[in-house]
Image (cartoon, rainbow, N blue to C red):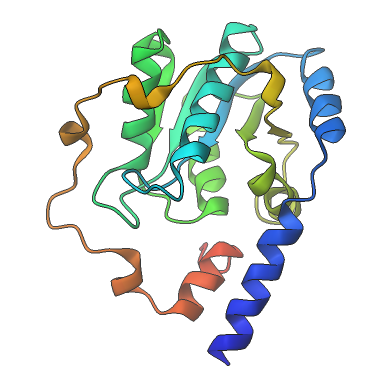
Length: 209
């Protein structure tokens, strides 16, 4: 059963990659016709070579959308899930170093799965009176969220896959941040707190109340 679920999850992620460059460009062009009160940027584990490039791309994409005037605010989302660092806070630290003003950055640190990033951030945005919301992420995640956002959020929340040609040529590995301010004490990895099946259900939004 576990092997089948691993295979199913792998297929799902591979399918989620199928957002072509042209599709990303079309969504970006449509986004330029409107402005958003906030974009939601889901986090990835910090201090993980596997996810480093994706982390950097999402941060740079959020800066691109902010610099283009397409969003007034940025909500970085992600708890300390697989490493002992709050993903949202790590992204905020990088964003500040890139010149994004602190007063337009919000952090949501409860989410542990992709759809939870959107769900909890959307609630936060509503609490602050924000109405027009979008999700900014990489094409890998965009297809999955396309399927889940409408189902679990039920609102018009566009998902904007990054367009690589629009990203600044900045090597975030050369930027120094004080990651210790984002460190979670008494951290326990999600792998040690939840079974594979429970984590899979979380990925598919089944843990949302």
